[in-house]
Image (cartoon, rainbow, N blue to C red; front, side, top):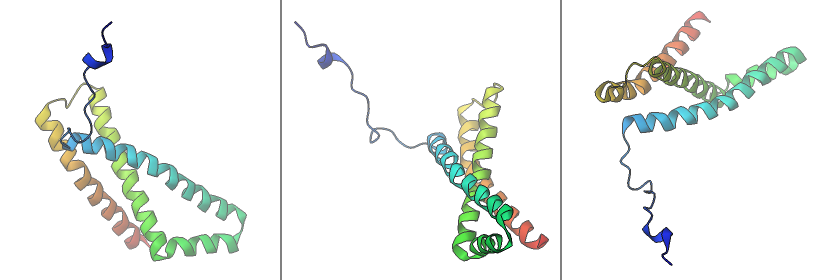
Length: 130
């Protein structure tokens, strides 16, 4: 009897694949989606603090005003905007557009640049509006 597992092809390992922009953006899109769960807990914490009372709300607001709190909020803002842009890419694909390799690669390269620029813009407008 022949050993059938010996003749089957092996699945390539990650070392075989060369990271391309679309692959990296797919991975980052999944990571930012997971990070949004953590950010939603922060939003819920802030809302619960607002409903609990002035003293607790002041403490939570103080925490978000520290450098570590602002860094977390900046990261949440970036994750939100990056994930949104990735979602728009997927929506475009769902509409049957943007499958050309050169366009798809350029879009994957532009996505992190635009997400960082939008994050900075949101924070600058937020500080100016304060």
